[in-house]
Length: 417
Image 1 (cartoon, rainbow, N blue to C red):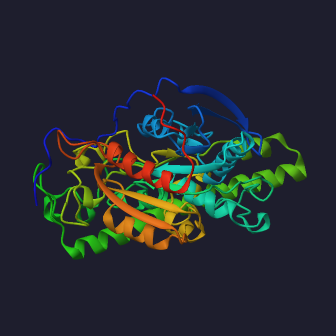
Image 2 (tube, one colour):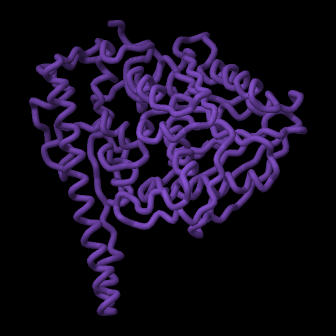
Image 3 (cartoon, rainbow, N blue to C red):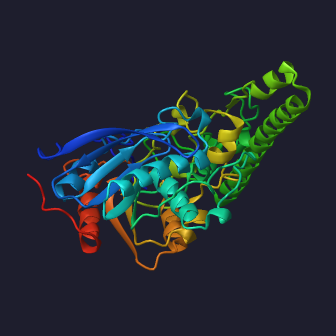
């Protein structure tokens, strides 16, 4: 297996082109059905009747690299925050659906003829979850979060889009973490505690020092994947214990009125999850082979990054863990949601993706419920970077496919200058 390409990391930061001079930009503050405040940016060009929406559950996509391409193609672009942008400590996906709904209602009221969500990375599962729930009768929508809290989805206006684009969608925050959580953590309070026989970065288990590709035996991978599920299940159990204690304290306060019970209900319980950059596929390129470079989304040395401060789900409340980060409990699972996605659908796969591997993409595409379903692949890394120096970026290649697909189905304005 070839060594990692020198100088190419995860490609998280990809520069965006200039927007057309005719672009008019406005900022809008919206109130969700449950009373939260979210903000969005509407960029329009003269004559635009189709609007493409970009959201991510955790990240600010205001300056996403696709925005200029979409504007030049004659579409308006709506980029919106969730209430958990850039701070996912309390990210509950069912609440994020209410954030999406507020934006969709706003765009319908603005009079756009077609609204097309575009979900990149985790935005893909966010929109798949939204479209699944929006298509249901209000009484059939999820009534509670995985932690048992009311969702308020039944009372929310949830317009269904007129199509959807998924760009490099991964299988969901929880499913993603299930694939990269390190099951060799021997003690959840000690980031250095290791079970040697499960350590993915131990030579005896198949790890090779970069730039060489590692090579894991099937028997090790079978044990490893089972142990990952076991670790997530253990954290689920801890989260549910915290949730149950808080619920008991709330119930006690309703009866007693005792401020001590109220304080127990409000006292935060924050779960720390160490070592979450340990998917064997990031260092053994023979597994689920693709054109991806060596390394993970966070960089070219998962064996070191795994022990650092940065990682998925590092700090989370019990409610957020169960709703977002648990691959066993979260409803925000692309494959689970996909049968409910029945609007015209485009999936753009990036062949060097380090988050959605080919087997993930095949499963997600196969699960979609849309009769009008298109799946294309272009060269690029997860965040839309180029695979090799001198090549077009993945974002440029994806933009060409996306704008052509939009033009076939919706009215686009005359391209502005």
